[in-house]
Amino acid sequence: MTGSTTRGALLLVAPGAMLFLLFFAVPFLTMAAMSVLTDNPLVSERAVLTLGHYARMTEDTYYLEIIWATLRLGLWTTLLSLLLGYPLAMLIARVRSAAARTVLLMAVIAPMVMGLVVRTYAWLGMFSNRGVINGTLIGLGLIEQPLALLGTEGAVVVALAHIYVPFMILTLTGVIARIDLRLEEAARGLGASRTRTFLEVTLPLSMPGILAGSLLVFALAISAYVTPIVIGGYEIQTLPMMIYQQISASFNLHFAAALGVVLLAVALLLVGAYGRAMRRAAGGAV
Image (tube, rainbow, N blue to C red; front, side):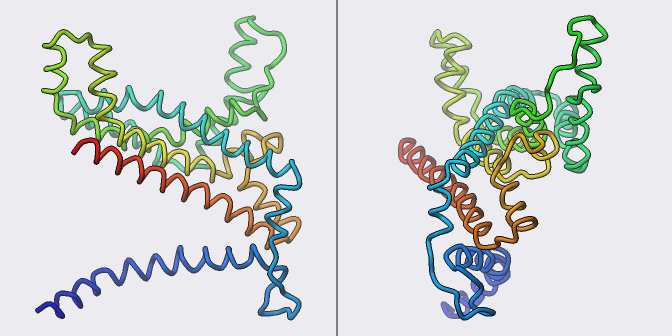
């Protein structure tokens, strides 16, 4: 009985394990191997192990600035998405009408149906010199010359936040909806104000959703390519843009692989930090 149960469990796990190996483990190991080799050992006998590709990042401050710019864009995008998404998630989770909740969820999901390129070019039309923002300000007589919005980190952050805020809202909505309202009512009954009840009851209980949504948005933002290059042009350099340039223009696959490993390592560190935070929260709850 035990043997058949084990075989049944293995059969259930096998498809997922195969997909993991095929689409994550093998590509990652290949990329990691390329990042520490001078050449492809399958076609060249001169291929040797080296850490020169990683040393190049630390020796040249240009690449360190690109790494920091990528992380900075991710942090600002995550913060803006959280500030915009939390109130909307609270509204969706607490609305009493099922029809109203459905309409609000559809409004959140609807932008995700549109292509990423379409939404990015919509923001291009907003931020361009003859776009909606500059056209409106000039028409109202508030400015004489168009503002230089394109090519700025602020414009890239706004566009990224618009694209990824639905992920934050959907993640938070499920967590906030599971918060027992009686806990908030008890706090109010003991004399706590609405603000204090939110800060000491609602916000701590929604922290798992905040952490999960922030992790998801940050990982998506630092790996974004289309939006930063369209809105930021080449004024804003990020790791995904540098990886593409190393592959398409410089044909330096090994340095591109090293950059990819760094990008993935950041994401994995975030996943580990999230898991550790959740374990601490669970231990505190017990």
